[in-house]
Amino acid sequence: MLIIKDIDSLRAYREKLDVSLGFVPTMGALHAGHASLVQKALEISDEVICSVFVNPTQFNDAQDLQNYPRTFESDAEMLEALGCHALFAPKVEHIYPKDHEPVRIDIGALGDVMEGAHRPGHFDGVVEVVARLFDLVQPDKAFFGEKDFQQLAVIRKLVHQKEYPIEIVPCPTVRESHGLAMSSRNERLSPDDRQYAAILHDTMMEMREMCQWMNPDEVAAWGRDELGAEERIELEYVEVMDAKELQPLFRWKEAESVRAFVAAHIGGVRLIDNLSLPSV
Ligand code: AMP
View (tube, protein in one colour):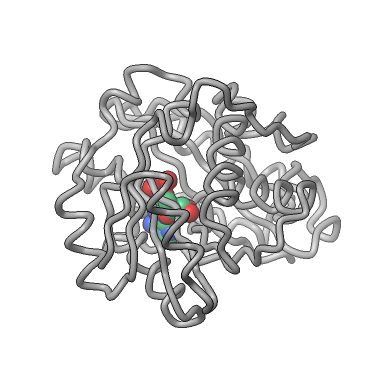
């Protein structure tokens, strides 16, 4: 596997390629969720490049950025074992040279809900880094996890508004055996909290059942009550949203597909997850 650490080497690599290129952007501390994206990319692209870059502009909390796990050696080993062809691991000054103009798009109402509302500036940072990476890597397809469902919607907006000739491929959430969505942040949970954190997924599974009896806003309120009553949880939000528009809904028939979303702190670690609901 080729390890590319600067822009000139990336350009040289890109210029020589004449086959379809799949791209998996990550912030490293790779786990089986990331591996599933790389595997999907290998299935439907001739060549696959993964990036590892902890993007400072998408962190609205300096402590969170500082605590973010960095495990470059084992990341490179995992990618090599998967058969990934190239790893792009730039430095902050490569992605953000002094004179760079940040790309901004209008994400509309996506900025007003959930991650948009709770992490001010977060999606500006995501758009900025993904646009820069797309410009540099110029992939044919790019792979993103449904674990970050709202981010996926923001990336689709970016591609649409900037007319990138890139196909966005969504990939299902990979979970630990007890249901907790895999996340680089899980490494910061104590073993006990890591077991306990499956409650987020368990509660959304119960919300699935509740759909038979309640309207969408009532299901969201039910989930909020359940998780809000837990002493070990500092809850940010529980929502039931139209999966396309990512806006709250009040009647099941208002949307073709519906999803539950949750964000909560457990043991000082911020976790997010989401799950499809039956639209009854
Ligand atoms: P991150 O390194 O957390 O920025 O994630 C990089 C990519 O991996 C994003 O597209 C995430 O949505 C995706 N991802 C993270 N965790 C998972 C998971 N458990 N299952 C599937 N995709 C994931």
